[in-house]
Structures are given as C-alpha cells and as structure tokens.
Length: 438
Image (spheres, rainbow, N blue to C red):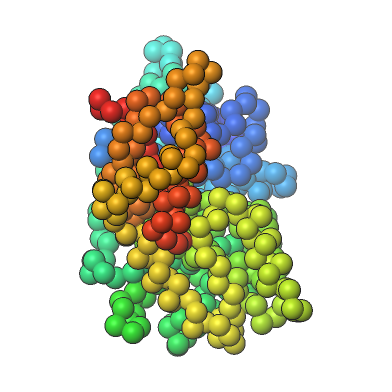
C-alpha cells in the first residue's frame, strides 16, 4: 500500500519546521525565527504507532503580492492537493491573525480532513487562548509545543483517524510492478503508451499533464506486468519553479509500490540535478533500477555519442553503477524492444537468493585475496560466516567479531565480489555486519 500523506500547513513563523523535525526524529528542515525560511516543500517518511506515512513541510502561506509569499502559498496549495490529511499549524501565543483566517478558508475549500495544531503552548497559562481557535471552523484545536515535543501524540492520533484504509490492488506474486519516475516532460507518459502499444495515457508537451499515478496491467511474452505512470501536476495557469520539486512526492509514492523503477532521463536535455535527486529515492528504497535515456532519436550522434553519454551517466550517478542503461525513443519506438528484457533481468536479480555455503565460499575467496582491515590498535576484522536474510533487495548479514571494524571501503569491496559472482544486475545490495554473539 502506498503511504498516506500528511501536509503541515500554516502561515510563516508558526513553527511548522520545528514540528516537522520532531515528527521525523531529525533536524531535516531549517529552523530559524524568521518568516519564510522554509522556501521549498520538504518530504520525509515518519511513523506513529503502526502507521507509516509521508510528511510534507511546506513554506508558509500568506495571501500577499510579494513574490516569496506567493511562491510559498502555491507550494502549500500543491501540498494540499497531494495530502490525505492536513495539519494546520497556528501560533497559540499570538492568537488568530488575519493570515490564519485566510489559510483556514483555503483549507476549508480544499475539502480535505484537517487537524489544527496550536503551537508554542508549552506554558500552561496560555491554554485559555486555545478556545478562540474554534472560531476558525475547523474543529478541535490541539495544544502542542514543537520545541518541547508536547502534545504531538494526541495530534498524530487525530490525524491517523483520517488516513485512508488499505485499498491497494492485489496482483499475483510473479507480476512485475514497475514505475516510471523522472522530472516533468522527459516522456514518461509517451513511454507508457509505447510499452502498451496504445494510447492509454494522455500525452502532452505541457510538463505535468498526468495528475495521478495510473496502474495499467498488461502481459507480454507470458510475463505479467503492472506499469505505474507518475508525473507532476499541471500548472495553475502560470510558470513557477516548484513544478519539478512537486514531482518528488509523486515519485516517492510510486516507488513505494514498485518492484522495478525506470528512471527516465531526457536524452536531448541531458542530466540535471533533479534527475539525480529523484533517482536517489529509488536507490535508498532498495528498488531495482533501470536508467532509461529517452528521446534518443532527437540526439545528434557520431560514432561515440552513446559511449560518451553513458560515461556521463556513470559519472553523475556513481551510486547507481549497478543499474543498466537503456537508450530508446518512446516516440519512434527505436530500441524499445530492449527495455522489457532488461526489466525482467533486474527483477530476477532483485529477488535472487543465494545458498549459504556458496555465499561463504565467495566471501572466503574475497578475504583471501584482500585481507580484512585492522583498526589503529591492530585489531583485525574477522568474518565468521555470512547468510542472506532477505530479497528485494538482496540483503546479507555478515557475522563478525566487531562490526565497528567493517570499513565502508571493505563493505564495498565485498559487495563488488558478490556482484561479480552472482550477477545482481540492476539491484542494490545491502550488507549488514552483526556481532557473532548477536
């Protein structure tokens, strides 16, 4: 099931970022006592009791003509469109302001479930001011203190009541679920149409024509697939820089439901920073990955164009050195026939399980060739044995004398040896070091 989305919304300087940081357990958002510091939406995963969900920290909303305020208002509107539940944060010390009332009206028009967090209520003498927030017409106000972590449990309990129930479609275990992610206008919808061989998804040159993720099951050569097309939101009659940032949450939600992720890059424009950011989410989620260079028909070529482009991809996506690269054109269907066989291959690698004795033979050979590292005191890492504990992604536990001695570079060395021995094309590998007594 794709995780529900909770958006934290409110005017500037009410403590949204402080609450966001408390909920995700780390200082991810910038916190500064100055309106407008959080200019971009920030996404993260959070968990409360048995609920896992995405959380969005928005910039403040203020209905003014100032460019920054207008931008942040638009960002918050986009977050509202994406949210299953909205947390409306107000400043309990200041009471209701005109801007709060404007935001409240915006939220009421959204028809989304809203819980209201009255922040900065760490002083019990302020609780008398709580009742005035009923006049916003949103419901029961919850007194909280983001800086001290007070009252957030009750707030999350209320929000979780509105989380949608599991309505995920059931597919057979051998069905390959693949999503297409990438910034707007790289040709994701065109590629879906090309794969399906029919116009099942609306295609437009306007970035963000596809509003929602669309599941499309199909069968090819007796293999069942589900393709999940994602894209950003269509623009609200104006051009603004947040459109590409908006695509991140769509990508996150699609990645959650995928076995294989196609990272689609515009071959004409080349790689930009947003491509790397979006691909990073798939890598961190442990999904199988194929890098797809689309619009290859429109690229002027010589004998070394593809080689140079591939070298550039490897340089820019160093953390995806395991991911195969497919060059194609969704428009002309050039090289399209190469895509699904690669998807099948990386899916198989993603679910590959290795026998323990065979795995340990590879580890022993690797250690013999390149002995384990020592610390400054001369204590050497000793690997007692290894076993695979999971697939999708393949996850290995190495039982050792001291996990602290497992240096990153040696872990990478072992990963490379495992890849060479067993393939594991297109899938990340996780290697965990555990003390033998554990």
